[in-house]
Image 1 (tube, helix red, strand yellow):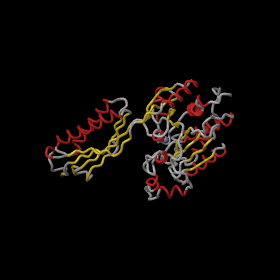
Image 2 (image 1 turned 30 degrees about the vertical axis):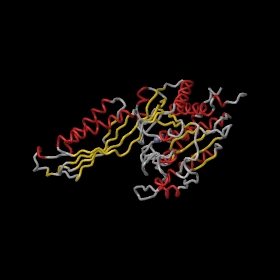
Image 3 (image 1 turned 90 degrees about the horizontal axis):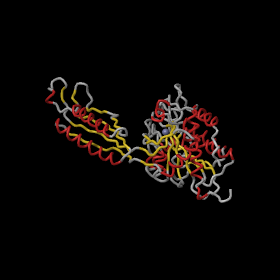
Image 4 (image 1 turned 60 degrees about the horizontal axis):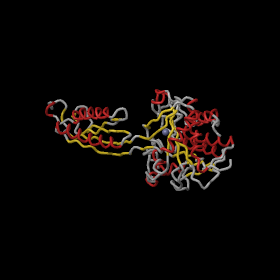
Length: 419
Ligand SMILES: [Zn+2]
């Protein structure tokens, strides 16, 4: 019936470029860090577009923006779609903002075609997804779903000593509504992949089956400080000597779980950190990810035993501290099949995939059936000013979003008998 319906691609692309001017950087990226003046301008522009589209715009206490298009049955729960407008300090034009503006394009397309849906459709722009200025990220969706505390987030301080709540008030986005005030029938987020897989596989659409689980550790090696010139090698209790072996074995362990395992040692701290002293302590961060929680548990046990064995052999003390973890998320079959039906109808080449990055959809999936759509980005580059997505893919993804939303907002059982 509505199979011929397509979004207005030119308007979507024009909007993306207009938004990219706010906080634009010389290398073609954007700097629209959460709760900055640029974030305010981006929010203002988006909220204005939503009002012009006839939506009812509401702001909650953590600054999340909701824009609602009425349904034929306004008593039904809304179908939610959106992402985030904030960026990394040297971010790209598409990360987050594409998901918000594609959602707006869906609503405008329905308006242009005079199509009403059973369920209301609601656009969201979540606050501080990136966490570049205020940590942790995924703030808006985290508070909304009860994973993060509102009071704690409002009290968070940035590097300049500025408080989250003061900045939120300053830009005029500390709303009255309590976050988490309403439930949703379903939630769909569209995002650039931020990785190289779709491009390499020559696919236009990624149907995201879930988000891999993450565990953050500190590996702490404690030995003895000693003079770099006078202490013979065999008399040292050298944390670096154990670390070399441990890291190598963790890489090998990760290889056992290819292609999904991801082991990253991103931060090294030596104490006292002097060029001519054998360090007394070495702390190495480990970020380990995998989509299967049984494997995450197995890896956890292995890491601890590798650490024990190797440190013991060199006469060191080894300790594994778990800092933070996030279990793997599997998205709802209802949402995945709605996306699949839309892709099949539109005829775009697609594949199922796991998200390597965390997204607001991850938190949403704990309160509502949730799904995600990915489109390719050039060379898999993101969190980078050179981030790029092809116009035809941006439009294709939005068409998939459009038909997925139509599908979810008009469930068969709730369709009116007489058309
Ligand atoms: Zn993002």
